[in-house]
Length: 239
Image 1 (cartoon, helix red, strand yellow):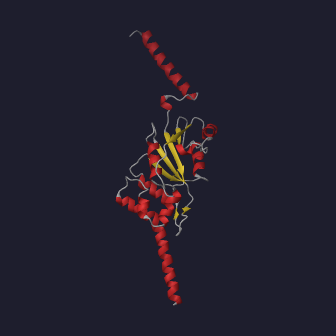
Image 2 (cartoon, one colour):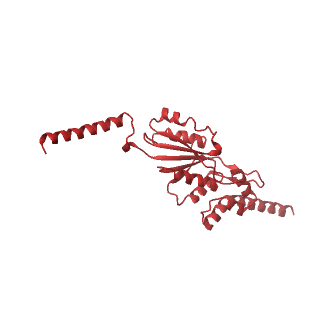
Image 3 (tube, rainbow, N blue to C red):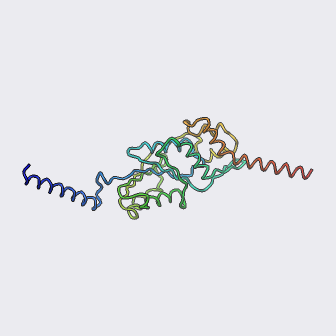
């Protein structure tokens, strides 16, 4: 090669490198700048059922999704049926972890802020969690198209964590009749083990199904046994 051609080649490489850095500095996202893509799924999940799990799986299979983060509300929820039973956030987390133990890209956490939704806003505004080039996906089912909880998310992140993109996606409605949390808690309160198991994910082993039932019913059964024991003791003292 002629010395002049070599000099021109070196100069062109230098210019290309300089322009690439300039583009990056001005905030235009290059292929190298593209970050992670995370779907956030907040909710009560007391308890989580197969519809919730199917929704998380659906989000995990969206194009380019790296991770789904399930955010569980920290408040416990009780049944409307007697005897009253309560499902806690920790029980919900254990159920989710059982459902997703083979799903490496579905992560579970309990709400840290005021509500699961406020956790979403806190997360997307936190530069330690998301940086420029990252994308946050917020899903809602087609029955909740009018849900406006995340309508301000894009403008909020633009003010507090510029460069992070927010996408809302409409998902199918998963699950079937009687899948609501209230109904599930009432099923547990009635001691309807088969009814409960019919509404948790099908892929679970028989052992996992049994463990899930014991998890949500065990505390309440222990409480009932304690109450029965106390009543018997009082009766014997009275007799």
